[in-house]
Length: 219
Length: 136
Image 1 (cartoon, rainbow over the protein chains, first blue to last red):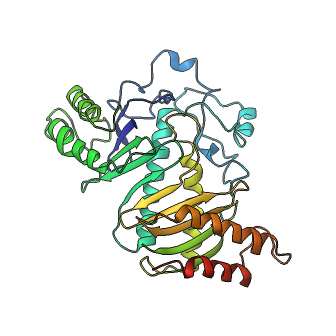
Image 2 (image 1 turned 135 degrees about the vertical axis):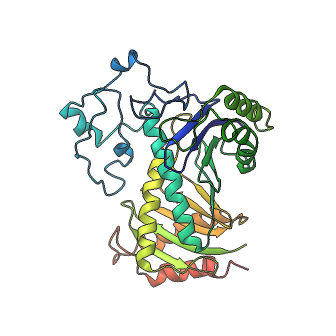
């Protein structure tokens, strides 16, 4: 039983906050311009070492479908490079169609986009299938469980935990009711909905940390 | 406790079998079912990449507020998806037996084209025996 990570997305599909606890596979720092500032220190692009790991270690979300598992669309579509950070050699593009099964971690901005894409698709899918205004709550794989809580204002709280935990929506709701309202919404220094900055600040981070570490599911 | 619906998705993401057993979910057209099955196939591939601790399977159970989807992925890439109420506990064994029925009545059928929609009375009747009577 443990908790791995917390993502908060705003209604403009952008990740505005990230925190993790027991991940053994941390995401790589995001590429420059991939995420907003003030999302998380841990995954903000580092100005100097970014050049050394550019290029070869970059993975694209288009790798997610291997050629055997579905209709692969736009495999060879040229990927527009980030702002001068990496150059994809042509041979590399071809190999991307068939990635090794256990790739190293994604860059954080890619990972955040995948998480958002999954929850958005599942949310729409659950609504369509149920025919009601029903929320998607969680899904489980062999190694983790993803929980979603969406506020009326369109903020999406996503938590990854051990697959055997019960629903953690109440925790996400507690984070919203407690630290989020106190240190983000009522914090005059945080500009919400800015599309330019995340919501990270030390009070919110410390309080969320304390709340999560106090849970019975946290070891 | 109810089993609402069953999907069989081939390894390319195409819906090859769809059947409803109980009311409770929206009545969708076959085209909508096809689109949703394709979406699920894509989501399933992505979820295995998001693991925080190394290699992971794709999504196995997806829950809404009143129903859940249990996904069983075979070694050959075929997915069996069972839509049930949240507290249904027999999903894993039902899916296992659906797979058996699929192996017996579909894969051993010389008139079945692999990866194409399943039109087999034998499979239909095995599923009816398995699920049609199994619900309260």
